[in-house]
Amino acid sequence: MERPLSVLVALVLVSFCKGWDEFCRGKPCPEYQLVQKNQDYEERLYVATSWITTTIKNNSSGAVLAANSRLKNYCKKHNTGRDVQIPVDTWPALITINQEGSLSWFIPPGAMPEITDESIKLETRPQATVYVRVFKGFPDLKMGEDNAKKLRDALTKAEKTYDFPAFSGAGYDPYFSIDHHNEVWIYAV
Image 1 (cartoon, rainbow, N blue to C red):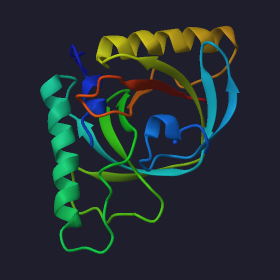
Image 2 (image 1 turned 135 degrees about the vertical axis):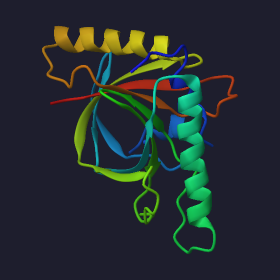
Image 3 (image 1 turned 30 degrees about the vertical axis):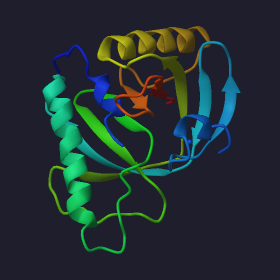
């Protein structure tokens, strides 16, 4: 995929167990247990989670905005006249960088939507160990890649096994927030 100047910006375009609420700010988010924390990363054990996901056609900012609009429009359309609503105020928004990019929104337990759009898929991710590096600042692709490299270097030094080269950027704040809580996630293998 092409590398845009700011793919991870979309992480925060959408309006996590004790300790996660400080950056979820009372919004629904995935539960986890903190297994280990050091100066370089956190090791978290996430419960099984559900996500709605759409593909990012390329890593241009326009493609990321289009993916965000697709999820938002799908949720609005789905929620009209239904008892079971897809929440649009959950955290984090995830952009996954692997062979193809994707944008995902967390779906809390009990809010399983019926997917009727071929461009949107429902993903159920099993319980997993995730290595997380937290960083501040306005998120962009360069910042995400730099933090993913730092996380990989720390994991290699600690002799941890992890999914390479895939990583996810997790955003927890509205686009125009003054202070951004950002994370890079790399799954253990």
